[in-house]
Length: 479
Image 1 (cartoon, rainbow, N blue to C red):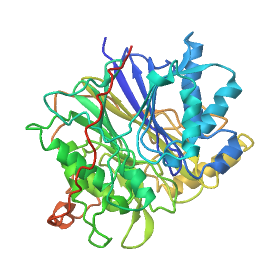
Image 2: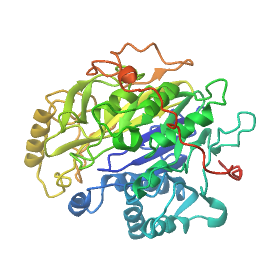
Image 3: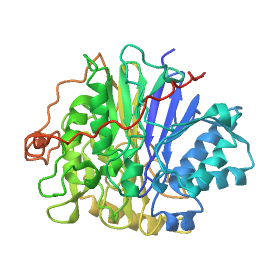
Image 4: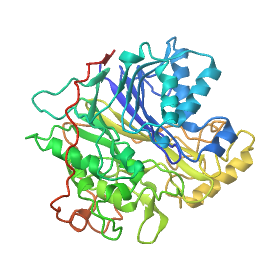
Protein backbone atom coordinates (compact mmCIF):
# COMPACT_ATOMS: atom_id res chain seq x y z
CA UNK A 1 0.00 0.00 0.00
CA UNK A 2 1.34 3.41 -0.97
CA UNK A 3 1.99 5.68 1.99
CA UNK A 4 1.70 9.47 2.24
CA UNK A 5 3.64 11.99 4.34
CA UNK A 6 2.15 15.42 4.99
CA UNK A 7 4.25 18.25 6.42
CA UNK A 8 2.19 21.04 8.00
CA UNK A 9 4.21 24.23 8.40
CA UNK A 10 1.98 25.76 11.07
CA UNK A 11 1.68 29.50 11.57
CA UNK A 12 2.79 30.05 15.17
CA UNK A 13 3.73 33.73 15.30
CA UNK A 14 7.45 34.29 15.70
CA UNK A 15 8.33 30.65 16.11
CA UNK A 16 8.57 27.28 14.42
CA UNK A 17 6.05 24.43 14.62
CA UNK A 18 5.97 21.58 12.12
CA UNK A 19 3.43 18.79 12.26
CA UNK A 20 4.15 15.64 10.24
CA UNK A 21 1.44 13.11 9.45
CA UNK A 22 2.20 9.70 7.97
CA UNK A 23 -0.60 7.65 6.41
CA UNK A 24 -0.44 3.98 5.48
CA UNK A 25 -2.98 4.57 2.72
CA UNK A 26 -2.39 7.56 0.44
CA UNK A 27 -6.01 7.53 -0.76
CA UNK A 28 -7.66 8.43 2.57
CA UNK A 29 -8.95 11.94 3.27
CA UNK A 30 -6.52 13.59 5.73
CA UNK A 31 -9.22 16.08 6.75
CA UNK A 32 -11.29 13.33 8.37
CA UNK A 33 -8.86 10.44 8.86
CA UNK A 34 -6.31 10.32 11.68
CA UNK A 35 -2.72 9.83 10.66
CA UNK A 36 -1.25 6.40 11.35
CA UNK A 37 1.76 8.21 12.79
CA UNK A 38 1.72 11.75 14.17
CA UNK A 39 4.98 13.67 14.65
CA UNK A 40 6.09 17.11 15.80
CA UNK A 41 9.36 18.68 14.68
CA UNK A 42 9.64 21.76 16.91
CA UNK A 43 6.62 23.24 18.61
CA UNK A 44 7.25 26.83 19.62
CA UNK A 45 5.76 30.27 19.21
CA UNK A 46 6.21 33.94 19.91
CA UNK A 47 3.78 36.83 20.31
CA UNK A 48 0.61 34.76 20.67
CA UNK A 49 -0.41 35.73 24.21
CA UNK A 50 -3.33 37.87 23.03
CA UNK A 51 -4.39 35.15 20.62
CA UNK A 52 -4.51 32.69 23.48
CA UNK A 53 -6.41 35.17 25.62
CA UNK A 54 -9.01 35.72 22.89
CA UNK A 55 -9.60 32.06 22.06
CA UNK A 56 -8.38 30.09 25.03
CA UNK A 57 -5.98 28.24 22.72
CA UNK A 58 -3.43 29.12 20.06
CA UNK A 59 -4.00 27.75 16.53
CA UNK A 60 -1.03 25.32 16.43
CA UNK A 61 -2.10 23.70 19.69
CA UNK A 62 -5.69 23.54 18.42
CA UNK A 63 -4.51 21.73 15.27
CA UNK A 64 -2.58 19.12 17.27
CA UNK A 65 -5.52 18.58 19.61
CA UNK A 66 -7.75 18.06 16.56
CA UNK A 67 -5.43 15.30 15.36
CA UNK A 68 -5.38 13.62 18.76
CA UNK A 69 -9.17 13.75 18.96
CA UNK A 70 -9.42 12.26 15.46
CA UNK A 71 -7.41 9.31 16.76
CA UNK A 72 -9.78 8.76 19.69
CA UNK A 73 -12.87 9.18 17.49
CA UNK A 74 -11.49 6.40 15.28
CA UNK A 75 -11.15 4.09 18.29
CA UNK A 76 -7.39 4.54 18.64
CA UNK A 77 -5.27 5.54 21.59
CA UNK A 78 -4.18 9.19 21.47
CA UNK A 79 -0.47 9.39 20.81
CA UNK A 80 2.39 11.43 19.38
CA UNK A 81 4.80 9.05 17.70
CA UNK A 82 7.81 11.35 17.40
CA UNK A 83 8.46 14.60 19.25
CA UNK A 84 11.69 16.25 18.09
CA UNK A 85 13.00 19.60 19.31
CA UNK A 86 15.84 21.03 17.21
CA UNK A 87 17.32 23.12 20.04
CA UNK A 88 16.32 24.86 23.22
CA UNK A 89 15.32 28.33 22.03
CA UNK A 90 11.90 29.09 23.47
CA UNK A 91 10.27 29.76 20.11
CA UNK A 92 10.89 26.10 19.24
CA UNK A 93 9.32 24.47 22.31
CA UNK A 94 7.13 27.02 24.15
CA UNK A 95 3.84 25.56 22.87
CA UNK A 96 4.59 22.30 24.68
CA UNK A 97 3.43 23.89 27.92
CA UNK A 98 0.11 24.92 26.40
CA UNK A 99 -0.32 21.55 24.69
CA UNK A 100 0.24 19.82 28.02
CA UNK A 101 -2.45 21.96 29.67
CA UNK A 102 -4.90 21.21 26.85
CA UNK A 103 -4.24 17.48 27.15
CA UNK A 104 -4.72 17.55 30.91
CA UNK A 105 -7.97 19.51 30.54
CA UNK A 106 -9.16 17.03 27.91
CA UNK A 107 -8.73 14.22 30.42
CA UNK A 108 -7.59 11.70 27.80
CA UNK A 109 -4.23 9.95 28.19
CA UNK A 110 -1.78 10.81 25.42
CA UNK A 111 1.29 8.65 24.88
CA UNK A 112 4.58 9.73 23.33
CA UNK A 113 6.49 6.93 21.63
CA UNK A 114 9.85 8.56 20.90
CA UNK A 115 11.60 11.87 21.52
CA UNK A 116 14.72 13.47 20.03
CA UNK A 117 16.28 16.46 21.75
CA UNK A 118 19.06 18.34 19.95
CA UNK A 119 21.24 21.33 20.70
CA UNK A 120 23.40 22.71 23.45
CA UNK A 121 22.87 24.73 26.61
CA UNK A 122 19.39 23.61 27.60
CA UNK A 123 17.96 25.84 30.33
CA UNK A 124 15.79 24.74 33.22
CA UNK A 125 12.58 26.10 31.66
CA UNK A 126 13.09 24.16 28.44
CA UNK A 127 13.98 21.00 30.37
CA UNK A 128 10.79 21.31 32.39
CA UNK A 129 8.68 21.73 29.25
CA UNK A 130 10.02 18.62 27.51
CA UNK A 131 9.91 16.65 30.78
CA UNK A 132 6.11 16.81 30.69
CA UNK A 133 6.25 14.75 27.51
CA UNK A 134 9.13 12.53 28.57
CA UNK A 135 6.78 11.41 31.36
CA UNK A 136 4.34 10.25 28.68
CA UNK A 137 6.83 7.80 27.15
CA UNK A 138 6.83 4.14 28.17
CA UNK A 139 10.48 4.27 29.26
CA UNK A 140 12.29 7.62 29.14
CA UNK A 141 15.69 5.92 29.37
CA UNK A 142 15.00 4.09 26.09
CA UNK A 143 12.49 6.31 24.32
CA UNK A 144 14.13 9.73 24.77
CA UNK A 145 17.28 10.28 22.69
CA UNK A 146 19.36 13.29 23.71
CA UNK A 147 22.16 14.37 21.38
CA UNK A 148 25.07 15.08 23.71
CA UNK A 149 27.76 15.59 21.08
CA UNK A 150 28.05 16.45 17.43
CA UNK A 151 26.29 13.86 15.31
CA UNK A 152 25.60 13.19 11.65
CA UNK A 153 24.21 10.08 10.02
CA UNK A 154 26.35 10.92 6.98
CA UNK A 155 29.87 10.84 8.46
CA UNK A 156 30.82 7.52 6.81
CA UNK A 157 29.29 6.71 3.41
CA UNK A 158 30.26 3.05 3.84
CA UNK A 159 28.70 2.62 7.29
CA UNK A 160 25.60 4.74 7.71
CA UNK A 161 23.47 4.10 10.81
CA UNK A 162 19.88 2.99 10.45
CA UNK A 163 17.48 5.94 10.31
CA UNK A 164 14.56 6.37 12.63
CA UNK A 165 11.70 4.68 10.76
CA UNK A 166 8.17 6.04 11.02
CA UNK A 167 6.16 3.75 8.79
CA UNK A 168 7.96 4.01 5.45
CA UNK A 169 9.34 7.46 6.27
CA UNK A 170 13.01 7.62 7.22
CA UNK A 171 14.16 10.36 9.60
CA UNK A 172 17.81 11.23 8.94
CA UNK A 173 19.91 13.52 11.13
CA UNK A 174 22.03 15.52 8.71
CA UNK A 175 23.87 17.35 11.49
CA UNK A 176 23.33 18.44 15.07
CA UNK A 177 25.18 19.87 18.07
CA UNK A 178 27.81 21.71 16.03
CA UNK A 179 30.11 23.86 18.17
CA UNK A 180 30.40 27.54 17.30
CA UNK A 181 33.45 29.79 17.29
CA UNK A 182 31.26 32.66 18.48
CA UNK A 183 30.96 33.64 22.13
CA UNK A 184 27.32 34.73 22.32
CA UNK A 185 24.95 32.27 23.96
CA UNK A 186 22.19 32.62 21.38
CA UNK A 187 24.59 31.75 18.55
CA UNK A 188 25.74 28.69 20.52
CA UNK A 189 22.17 27.46 20.72
CA UNK A 190 21.35 28.19 17.08
CA UNK A 191 24.55 26.70 15.71
CA UNK A 192 23.90 23.47 17.61
CA UNK A 193 20.40 23.12 16.13
CA UNK A 194 19.39 19.74 14.77
CA UNK A 195 18.99 19.52 10.98
CA UNK A 196 16.67 16.73 9.82
CA UNK A 197 15.73 15.12 6.52
CA UNK A 198 12.42 13.26 6.26
CA UNK A 199 12.49 10.84 3.33
CA UNK A 200 9.74 8.85 1.64
CA UNK A 201 11.03 7.01 -1.38
CA UNK A 202 12.66 9.46 -3.79
CA UNK A 203 11.20 12.57 -2.12
CA UNK A 204 12.03 14.35 1.12
CA UNK A 205 11.42 17.32 3.42
CA UNK A 206 14.25 19.39 4.90
CA UNK A 207 13.90 20.85 8.42
CA UNK A 208 16.99 22.82 9.58
CA UNK A 209 15.60 24.50 12.72
CA UNK A 210 17.71 27.57 13.50
CA UNK A 211 20.93 26.28 11.92
CA UNK A 212 23.57 28.92 11.17
CA UNK A 213 26.27 29.32 8.56
CA UNK A 214 28.66 27.45 10.85
CA UNK A 215 26.23 24.53 11.02
CA UNK A 216 26.15 24.31 7.24
CA UNK A 217 29.91 24.82 6.90
CA UNK A 218 30.41 21.78 9.12
CA UNK A 219 27.79 19.84 7.13
CA UNK A 220 29.65 20.69 3.92
CA UNK A 221 32.81 19.22 5.41
CA UNK A 222 30.97 16.02 6.27
CA UNK A 223 29.31 15.70 2.86
CA UNK A 224 32.59 16.32 1.03
CA UNK A 225 33.56 12.66 1.56
CA UNK A 226 30.59 11.53 -0.55
CA UNK A 227 31.50 10.94 -4.20
CA UNK A 228 27.83 11.25 -5.16
CA UNK A 229 25.24 13.47 -3.55
CA UNK A 230 23.08 11.13 -1.41
CA UNK A 231 20.25 13.62 -0.80
CA UNK A 232 16.90 12.67 -2.40
CA UNK A 233 14.75 15.23 -4.20
CA UNK A 234 13.75 17.81 -1.58
CA UNK A 235 10.16 18.81 -2.26
CA UNK A 236 9.88 21.36 0.56
CA UNK A 237 12.43 22.98 2.87
CA UNK A 238 11.98 25.19 5.88
CA UNK A 239 14.06 28.37 5.64
CA UNK A 240 16.74 28.22 8.38
CA UNK A 241 16.21 30.40 11.46
CA UNK A 242 13.00 31.94 10.10
CA UNK A 243 14.96 33.66 7.33
CA UNK A 244 17.49 35.42 9.58
CA UNK A 245 20.38 37.24 7.91
CA UNK A 246 22.62 37.67 10.97
CA UNK A 247 23.19 33.95 11.57
CA UNK A 248 23.62 33.10 7.89
CA UNK A 249 26.14 35.86 7.16
CA UNK A 250 29.87 35.28 7.69
CA UNK A 251 30.44 39.01 7.28
CA UNK A 252 29.42 41.83 9.59
CA UNK A 253 28.23 43.77 6.55
CA UNK A 254 24.56 43.67 5.63
CA UNK A 255 25.23 45.59 2.41
CA UNK A 256 27.47 42.84 1.01
CA UNK A 257 26.63 39.75 3.10
CA UNK A 258 28.72 36.62 2.75
CA UNK A 259 26.17 33.86 2.22
CA UNK A 260 28.47 31.21 0.75
CA UNK A 261 27.30 28.52 3.19
CA UNK A 262 23.61 29.03 2.40
CA UNK A 263 24.51 29.06 -1.29
CA UNK A 264 26.32 25.73 -0.87
CA UNK A 265 23.36 24.28 1.03
CA UNK A 266 20.89 25.50 -1.59
CA UNK A 267 22.92 24.06 -4.45
CA UNK A 268 23.37 20.76 -2.59
CA UNK A 269 19.74 20.33 -1.48
CA UNK A 270 18.09 22.08 -4.44
CA UNK A 271 14.71 22.45 -2.72
CA UNK A 272 11.73 22.62 -5.07
CA UNK A 273 9.73 24.67 -2.53
CA UNK A 274 10.74 26.75 0.51
CA UNK A 275 8.69 28.20 3.34
CA UNK A 276 9.54 30.66 6.11
CA UNK A 277 7.83 30.76 9.51
CA UNK A 278 7.89 34.19 11.15
CA UNK A 279 5.70 36.63 13.05
CA UNK A 280 3.86 39.69 11.78
CA UNK A 281 6.27 42.67 11.71
CA UNK A 282 8.49 40.84 14.17
CA UNK A 283 11.34 42.64 15.92
CA UNK A 284 13.88 40.16 14.50
CA UNK A 285 13.23 41.32 10.91
CA UNK A 286 12.46 37.80 9.65
CA UNK A 287 12.46 36.65 6.90
CA UNK A 288 15.04 38.67 5.01
CA UNK A 289 14.36 39.00 1.30
CA UNK A 290 17.95 38.18 0.39
CA UNK A 291 17.69 34.90 2.30
CA UNK A 292 14.50 33.96 0.47
CA UNK A 293 16.09 34.86 -2.85
CA UNK A 294 19.25 32.90 -2.12
CA UNK A 295 17.51 29.76 -0.88
CA UNK A 296 14.95 30.08 -3.66
CA UNK A 297 17.56 29.69 -6.39
CA UNK A 298 16.24 26.30 -7.55
CA UNK A 299 12.58 26.40 -6.61
CA UNK A 300 9.95 25.50 -9.16
CA UNK A 301 7.14 27.67 -10.35
CA UNK A 302 3.36 27.59 -10.04
CA UNK A 303 3.20 24.43 -7.96
CA UNK A 304 0.63 26.57 -6.17
CA UNK A 305 -1.31 29.61 -7.40
CA UNK A 306 0.43 32.96 -7.07
CA UNK A 307 0.15 34.36 -3.56
CA UNK A 308 1.61 37.19 -1.44
CA UNK A 309 4.82 36.77 0.49
CA UNK A 310 5.91 39.09 3.29
CA UNK A 311 9.60 39.83 3.79
CA UNK A 312 12.06 42.21 5.43
CA UNK A 313 14.15 44.35 3.11
CA UNK A 314 17.52 45.27 4.59
CA UNK A 315 18.42 48.20 2.27
CA UNK A 316 15.16 50.03 3.08
CA UNK A 317 14.97 48.76 6.68
CA UNK A 318 11.31 47.88 6.44
CA UNK A 319 8.88 45.04 5.83
CA UNK A 320 7.49 44.66 2.35
CA UNK A 321 5.09 42.46 0.43
CA UNK A 322 5.26 40.86 -2.99
CA UNK A 323 1.55 40.74 -3.83
CA UNK A 324 1.72 37.94 -6.39
CA UNK A 325 4.65 35.52 -6.23
CA UNK A 326 4.37 32.43 -8.43
CA UNK A 327 7.69 30.79 -7.57
CA UNK A 328 7.39 28.06 -4.93
CA UNK A 329 8.27 30.41 -2.06
CA UNK A 330 5.88 30.70 0.87
CA UNK A 331 5.62 32.73 4.08
CA UNK A 332 3.26 32.12 6.98
CA UNK A 333 2.32 35.83 7.07
CA UNK A 334 0.43 37.06 4.01
CA UNK A 335 -0.43 40.68 4.80
CA UNK A 336 1.10 43.77 6.43
CA UNK A 337 -2.11 45.24 7.81
CA UNK A 338 -4.39 44.11 10.60
CA UNK A 339 -6.26 41.86 10.99
CA UNK A 340 -3.28 39.86 9.83
CA UNK A 341 -3.85 37.15 7.25
CA UNK A 342 -1.75 34.09 8.03
CA UNK A 343 -1.42 30.59 6.65
CA UNK A 344 -0.48 27.03 7.38
CA UNK A 345 1.47 25.80 4.36
CA UNK A 346 0.96 22.10 3.81
CA UNK A 347 3.15 19.83 1.70
CA UNK A 348 2.26 16.27 0.72
CA UNK A 349 4.40 13.55 -0.82
CA UNK A 350 3.95 9.92 -1.80
CA UNK A 351 6.75 7.91 -3.42
CA UNK A 352 5.53 9.12 -6.84
CA UNK A 353 3.52 12.33 -6.31
CA UNK A 354 3.66 15.71 -4.59
CA UNK A 355 1.18 18.46 -3.74
CA UNK A 356 0.98 21.78 -1.89
CA UNK A 357 -1.94 23.13 0.11
CA UNK A 358 -2.82 26.09 2.28
CA UNK A 359 -5.15 26.87 5.15
CA UNK A 360 -5.75 30.60 5.50
CA UNK A 361 -7.06 32.28 8.64
CA UNK A 362 -7.22 35.53 10.57
CA UNK A 363 -4.52 35.77 13.20
CA UNK A 364 -1.67 37.81 14.51
CA UNK A 365 -1.58 41.21 16.13
CA UNK A 366 -3.40 41.82 18.36
CA UNK A 367 -4.42 38.20 18.70
CA UNK A 368 -6.99 36.47 16.56
CA UNK A 369 -9.56 39.13 15.85
CA UNK A 370 -12.36 36.79 14.80
CA UNK A 371 -12.95 35.34 18.24
CA UNK A 372 -16.27 33.60 18.92
CA UNK A 373 -17.98 36.73 20.19
CA UNK A 374 -17.40 38.56 16.91
CA UNK A 375 -20.54 38.54 14.78
CA UNK A 376 -20.74 37.63 11.12
CA UNK A 377 -21.01 41.24 9.94
CA UNK A 378 -17.79 42.10 11.73
CA UNK A 379 -16.17 39.01 10.25
CA UNK A 380 -17.27 40.11 6.79
CA UNK A 381 -15.76 43.56 7.40
CA UNK A 382 -12.49 41.96 8.50
CA UNK A 383 -12.37 39.85 5.37
CA UNK A 384 -12.98 42.92 3.25
CA UNK A 385 -9.99 44.56 4.95
CA UNK A 386 -7.87 41.48 4.24
CA UNK A 387 -8.99 41.53 0.63
CA UNK A 388 -7.66 45.07 0.23
CA UNK A 389 -4.43 44.20 2.06
CA UNK A 390 -3.78 41.33 -0.29
CA UNK A 391 -4.60 43.46 -3.32
CA UNK A 392 -6.90 40.75 -4.60
CA UNK A 393 -4.05 38.34 -5.21
CA UNK A 394 -5.05 35.51 -2.89
CA UNK A 395 -8.82 35.23 -2.73
CA UNK A 396 -12.01 37.15 -3.44
CA UNK A 397 -14.66 37.61 -0.78
CA UNK A 398 -15.29 34.62 1.45
CA UNK A 399 -12.85 31.79 2.01
CA UNK A 400 -13.66 29.17 -0.64
CA UNK A 401 -12.65 25.70 -1.70
CA UNK A 402 -10.43 27.25 -4.36
CA UNK A 403 -8.95 30.71 -4.64
CA UNK A 404 -11.36 33.23 -6.07
CA UNK A 405 -14.39 31.01 -5.41
CA UNK A 406 -17.12 31.86 -2.93
CA UNK A 407 -17.31 29.78 0.22
CA UNK A 408 -19.95 27.07 0.42
CA UNK A 409 -19.79 26.78 4.21
CA UNK A 410 -19.38 29.17 7.10
CA UNK A 411 -15.91 29.37 8.65
CA UNK A 412 -15.08 27.71 11.94
CA UNK A 413 -16.80 29.73 14.70
CA UNK A 414 -13.66 29.77 16.84
CA UNK A 415 -11.61 31.58 14.22
CA UNK A 416 -12.21 32.20 10.54
CA UNK A 417 -10.24 29.72 8.52
CA UNK A 418 -10.54 28.21 5.12
CA UNK A 419 -10.63 24.51 4.45
CA UNK A 420 -7.31 23.13 3.27
CA UNK A 421 -7.01 24.16 -0.36
CA UNK A 422 -4.83 21.84 -2.44
CA UNK A 423 -3.18 22.77 -5.71
CA UNK A 424 -3.55 19.25 -7.16
CA UNK A 425 -1.20 16.28 -7.16
CA UNK A 426 1.60 16.10 -9.69
CA UNK A 427 3.53 13.01 -10.67
CA UNK A 428 7.19 12.56 -9.77
CA UNK A 429 9.32 10.34 -11.98
CA UNK A 430 12.74 10.81 -10.42
CA UNK A 431 13.43 14.49 -10.95
CA UNK A 432 11.55 17.75 -10.85
CA UNK A 433 10.73 19.39 -14.19
CA UNK A 434 13.15 21.92 -15.59
CA UNK A 435 12.61 25.13 -13.67
CA UNK A 436 11.08 27.89 -15.75
CA UNK A 437 11.79 30.64 -13.26
CA UNK A 438 13.59 33.94 -13.27
CA UNK A 439 17.16 34.12 -12.02
CA UNK A 440 17.39 33.06 -8.42
CA UNK A 441 13.99 31.40 -8.52
CA UNK A 442 11.85 34.36 -7.42
CA UNK A 443 10.04 36.66 -9.83
CA UNK A 444 11.20 39.76 -8.00
CA UNK A 445 14.86 38.79 -7.95
CA UNK A 446 16.89 40.98 -10.33
CA UNK A 447 19.95 38.75 -10.30
CA UNK A 448 21.04 35.41 -8.99
CA UNK A 449 22.86 36.05 -5.70
CA UNK A 450 25.59 33.45 -6.05
CA UNK A 451 28.11 35.69 -7.76
CA UNK A 452 27.65 38.88 -5.77
CA UNK A 453 27.20 37.31 -2.35
CA UNK A 454 29.84 34.63 -2.28
CA UNK A 455 33.27 36.18 -1.62
CA UNK A 456 36.28 33.91 -1.91
CA UNK A 457 36.90 31.98 1.32
CA UNK A 458 39.57 33.26 3.64
CA UNK A 459 42.24 30.96 5.01
CA UNK A 460 40.52 30.48 8.37
CA UNK A 461 36.91 30.65 7.13
CA UNK A 462 35.76 27.08 7.74
CA UNK A 463 35.22 26.08 11.37
CA UNK A 464 37.29 23.17 12.55
CA UNK A 465 35.57 20.10 13.99
CA UNK A 466 35.77 20.18 17.78
CA UNK A 467 34.08 16.96 18.85
CA UNK A 468 34.96 13.30 18.93
CA UNK A 469 32.83 10.80 17.06
CA UNK A 470 29.45 10.08 18.66
CA UNK A 471 28.21 6.77 19.97
CA UNK A 472 26.10 4.96 17.37
CA UNK A 473 22.38 5.51 17.83
CA UNK A 474 20.23 2.46 18.52
CA UNK A 475 17.91 1.50 15.65
CA UNK A 476 14.31 2.52 16.28
CA UNK A 477 11.38 1.51 14.07
CA UNK A 478 7.83 2.73 14.73
CA UNK A 479 5.27 0.48 13.06
